[in-house]
Length: 270
Figure 1: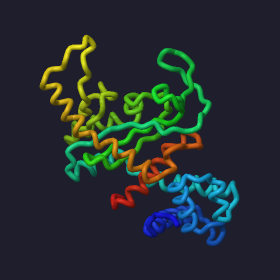
Figure 2: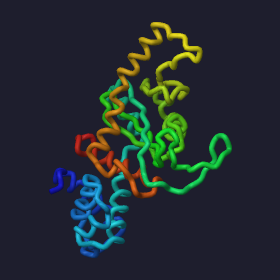
Figure 3: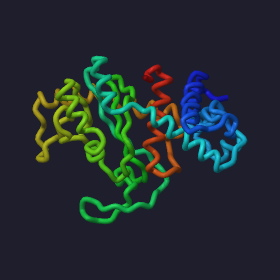
Figure 4: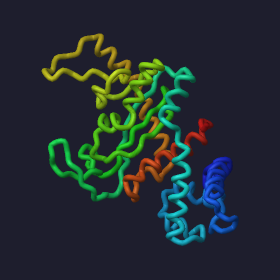
């Protein structure tokens, strides 16, 4: 038994069928129907089974299983909301603010070298902070912590503030200036710029912050604490996100696909 609704399976099936029509695939030419392919990929998201073994259960070869898996991920990821659409929609809904958060999605090591800020050669996908390889993804959540948008994957060696500058900060500054939509973030995003509010760090000389600043910090942390719920919803529901054996470069699309599935299950899809 697969614990997803038939409506979700039918929704994914319709997306896959539309892709086959766009490619001009003949009826009956594929090993699995769109409905069965939808069942196959949803079973992988929920159970995190080996793709080849799962494919054998559906009566398809290893190569076909990986191809069908990749096709479904691409189709679902293409449905993920655009950043500017999310910001406009949040403004139209009257949201008071958004939350910005980052997460390292762990994966098997990928040997790819890059140059650090110190000019040293390092493993691009290895996070020194987490002591594990993976991909850094940024997310925007609503005031209630529900995930609204997921960024593309950045190498695990990238700090949150650096990944945010590449993926989202420009749009957030625009939203603060033109939509009056501020964003709350943790201290790791200190210096993010206009419209992105972070707690004030303690002074280097050990002096206590004044009462107004401490009160502001407490309010910010209280408001954005639900941001942790965004990634928790995704990884709690879709077990495939808990550890990846695929290339870290593909993690962004897989998490975006999970976001689309989550939006449908919660009635948030467009």
